[in-house]
Length: 205
Image (cartoon, rainbow, N blue to C red; front, side):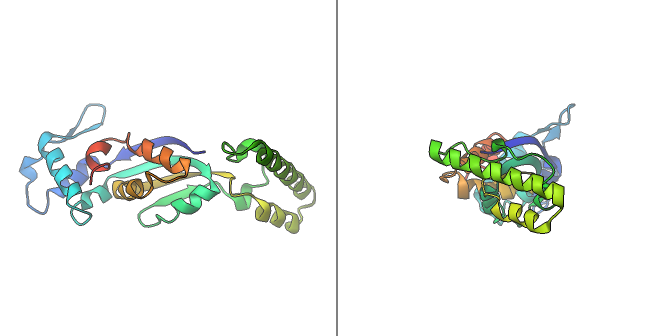
């Protein structure tokens, strides 16, 4: 399970202007921002951008200057894979170290959409036990109890992170993960396909 919210894409106009620096072709720039502040590709710039994207990573450097901020709510097992894309990405997460005991554990704190009935019942028992540990910790402040919570926490536990990255990061993730067996990656890549000018910049090789 993954939820994707509160995303914003910005700096298109500066990235496109920079893409024209190598050949000093700024006079051909025809992109603009409309009255609402939305970036609109001009025909000349879109032709150049698509050509650069197809020419390879050395040529599509302007993608690294198109920035994206997004809230991602996903299980720890997915975050472990996302963290392989450390270069050029930044994230601020909710804290398991400081806040794991601050509210009641429920089954919906965990991704369980693919569990069988038997596994779902087992997870429910785990959640009940974690909740018992949590209330005990609140009463006693016993650090060993807190450690039990942290070390028993399943990787299906969902965590919210606000992430900032660029279109080059998205391009790399998309082509590496679009056919991945984890549904979370497929949802992420389908979302990436809906980003501004994704068909021209991200979904081309």
